[in-house]
Image (cartoon, rainbow, N blue to C red):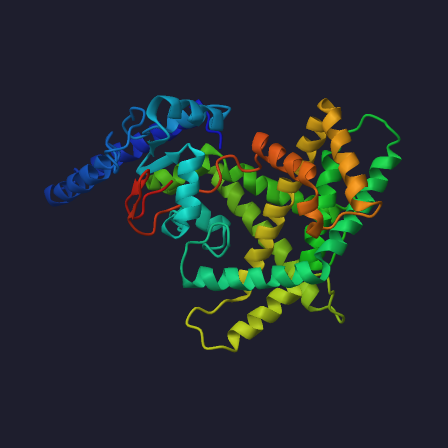
Length: 412
């Protein structure tokens, strides 16, 4: 997430202005003055350069903005890796009133998110995240609780049924169509990013709504424009500052207003698609939506304290669209780019496919027989990960081990 220096400076001035105005308003009478002074001191204390994890090293933090300047670098993952060389594989960064623990070692990350995953299964409280996720009702941004567990079971069961019944056929159909599109270019120099996006999108929209689109579809372009705008706006410093500096929520924020508008547009589009699906006379067997809705009805017929609603199906669809479209398209783009520069790898993958598959198209079950292809996939994801900083995690309890000691509610 990139944050401009100008944005950080503006945030600093805005917070300082609010603090001064609050302090001035507290001078109106003596009683109010004492209360305002106490509140002001309590509020300012959380921005002082100290850490909730005093044992962890980290760069010096500044009043109010903390270490936000460290997040202004263009290549943030590389910069965070450079900081690890100075402060160690576990260090802290302070942004406003939030202290984050940065894990910069595969061993430490594996220990926290694999071996002790249940300790770090939570998500940090986020004002803007709640808005984007429909109040925390997504699998990706929802906090770890009974409602989230029920939601995950619902989506996991639907995906399992989809995998067994239709996923392979949908992917193969789109892959063959993409192959035809590429052949039709007849060796001309082209930008393939849009073709990859359409192919990845059609897999998800077929599974979600039972619909396929071509590259010129206005409906598909509207959907992607909306989702891409939300992702871009959410990464803006004017949005992220609202989580670290709550007082900024009282000020006009054009970027935040645009985000609210795009979220409302997204929900309108998804609701229309779901309503269209429900109104179909014949259920599309490829669509995961039917499995989600049947699972939701079954859930309602059991005595559960945490009831799931249509909102959970709605947000599961959003997760599928955002998590399964641009991520896949970006990986395909980088794979082609790397293979163009390494034709010998391209030859090895092609020869393996011809030898092992003997002329047929690959299936997911063939993956263990295709080590060169699996190595290619892993290497591209290593060099160009789709989410290099992943999603923040929150410790839901005190966690202690040989390498990592974190208190409850710490963010990493």
